Figure 1 (tube, rainbow, N blue to C red):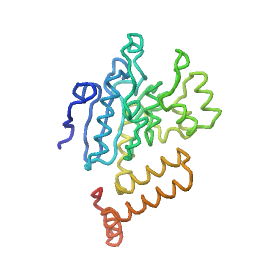
Figure 2: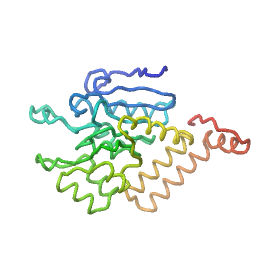
Figure 3: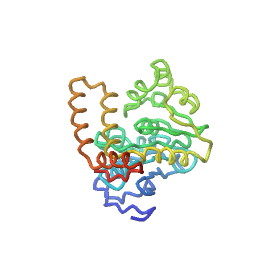
Figure 4: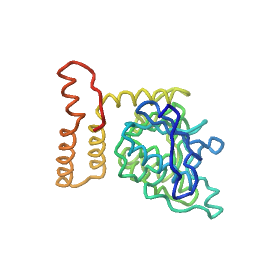
Length: 273
């Protein structure tokens, strides 16, 4: 499929084509998903969650794709839920995959990088937190301001912040709704890399390139084990999963290719199998 093309079936939940909220592009084995409602700082409407769930589920199923980048159009990453949907009474439950099709998507074992080009607020911050790595613009900022409007960050954000930040820092954000600058987020290890304005996507692509030097089967197994660690799965269950993952990796074509390429002093050619 040529770069920029993304043939998608109709979204069965909404009855809409799945390109209403996002732009989706392929660059080789990399998928770039851009939330595309810049006039609303990419605020999320109910249909956008369904659309993104379809996109990320198909990314997972596509053997020709290894890594995804999620970013926002315009000057913001995502300002969270569009409050007008709540006021109008048209809001509805999230899809099983969670906010942005990613916050509770346990089937998603391929790496996803958040390229945070501006504000990431509320549900937008929760979506960024659900990604595996985060590159942020130096002037970007994050917040979970839900309590300020009578709500709570119950889309996975509370769990993620308490796992990824020092407890006192996380609770200050959660209980005040105040913003955390990208610089501070980087200092606390929440953001992997800072980039100047306009260079966030390029930095995320460079990071994706480093990831794609690795075998796809090994990457997925690694993400699965990391997810178990974050969920504090009991050691016995984690060991069973690790044994199964080891068997998948060492029995894969990627493993055989990696060993052969090492011995022959050449770059491996991964098949993802």
